[in-house]
Amino acid sequence: TSLTLWVDAERSPALKDIAAKFKAEKGIDVKLVVKDFAAVRDDFITQAPTGKGPDIMVGPHDWLGKLVQNGVVAPVQLGDKAGTFAESSIKAMTYDGQTYGVPYSIENVALVRNTTLAPEAKTTLDDVLAEGKKAVAAGDAKFPFLVGLDPKQADPYHLYPLQTSLGAPVFAQNADGSYDASELALDNEGGKKFAQLLADLGDKGSKVLNSNITGDIAKEKFLAGESPYFLTGPWNIPDIEAKGIKFAVDPLPTAGDKPAQPFIGVNGFFISAKSKNALAANEFVVNYLSQPDAQDELFKVGGRPPALTASFEKAASDPVVKAFGEIGANGVPMPAVPAMDAVWADWGGTELNLIKGKEADPAAAWSKMTANIEKKISGGK
Image 1 (cartoon, rainbow, N blue to C red):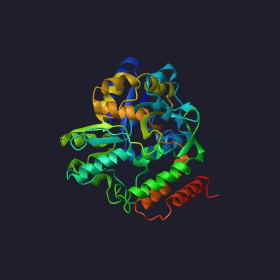
Image 2: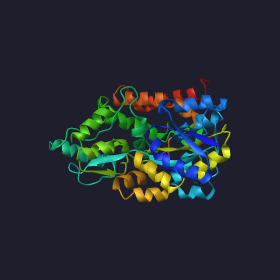
Image 3: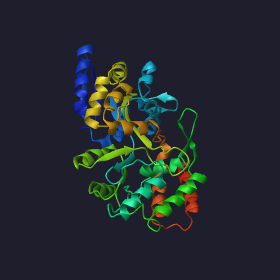
Image 4: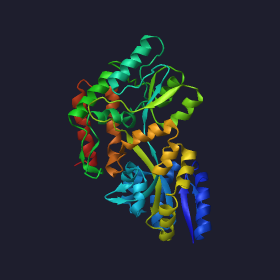
């Protein structure tokens, strides 16, 4: 018996030792097949039913809706092991009441602060922007606050914590934290306030949000010491460290009276529903990939806070990892529901128009966006 595991090039080396341990103890070979991340989900959906797909696949939790919808992933029984992981990571790997994967990392944004330009942490967006403007007025910085915006789609992902702090999540959530895809929750009073906020901070307002500053430009300006604040994720930390900037990772600032909850992305291991070696695949995923030595190795190559609590506690000796992890613990999983595919385009396009000052009535534009999304979700009915 042998198992095939589809993995990306970055994580493949981290799995070699645990695969060797599995072979030594169970006599089962685990073949690590490196796949292009961009194509792996669709390849899995296409190939699994034919028996040509892998037994196990690495991927982010927000693929789950499509994978479950296509009947290509099997639930996993974690039992007591579920309690050894961050609760948010298990919630992310749960769909329609079933857990479908073993998580290994959690990823989310935070507020990175240049401590030379802004020595003290602030908790509200108003205070953060006041501090940023003070640095600009003193001639120490050029931008009070940086976040990268896509020239066509703005960035609902990065801006989401400000939106949630105003009480406007994407979908309503059930008691267990799962999303109710039948109920968009965008168009409430908080959503309209958020729409107004984007206009107020945008190109025709205070220019804090600049539609011409992409993710790459925001990073370049922060690395050049031109802003005290950068709303970003752990992927940009290595370059900030390499530049020698003194920085801290702060909790996300609130624009309203609710917590600023970012989206969290959880990576994990899924078992094919069509695997001919389902028992062996379950044994490897549930009892080996959940071990600290496997999760520790994956942290070393990826640098993201581990989902396994024991591994996170070790990794959290690094204050940056600790800060991102603590913020992620209060985040909400990126919706894995298939309906999410119908949300992004209108959401991002409307955010961009608001930031560009193209909407005379931000609240009306937000309501129109929600109606368009609802129509798409219901298939145009």
